Image 1 (spheres, helix red, strand yellow):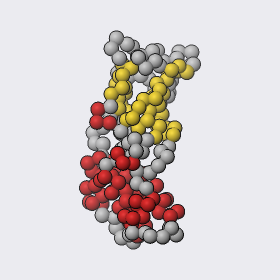
Image 2 (tube, rainbow, N blue to C red):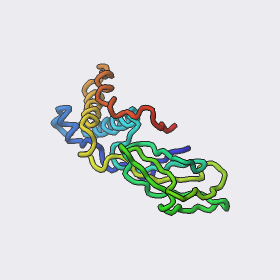
Image 3 (tube, rainbow, N blue to C red):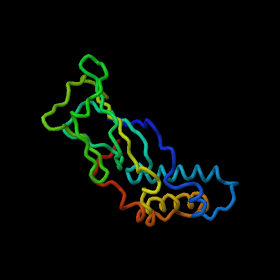
Image 4 (cartoon, one colour):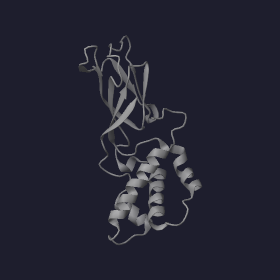
Length: 186
């Protein structure tokens, strides 16, 4: 199983101006470094929670079809395509009527539709390709605790250098959003 980022997010869950307000930064002299810290903070929070915050497209590559395919990175917004290499090693697109998509609580899964069966795929590595879009539809939909945690991390990286990040507070803010006991991509 492999995961590949196809289309990265086009925005952060917290804007530069919001982070600067949070950190009480009034000038533009440090915008470049604050933006770099913002990128790092989002990456850290996404990795800790096992989620992706802003809409982005990923490709999940599997060695074969299975009864239930769990998609990583809630919130699932859409399954964009399911493709597979057939027995002649030709890439085929699977008709969306063959499978169903479920996204209860944002956790995505793909299963067979009633009275359908998976096609025979070429028996090799990465023969099934599922493109899906995940994340929240816009920054306003990202929970405030995640937005605050990201801003706190930026503050620590920018102004708290030399201090220790309060991991208890960070875990308190991120904890409710961590995907526990759930598919974790390797």
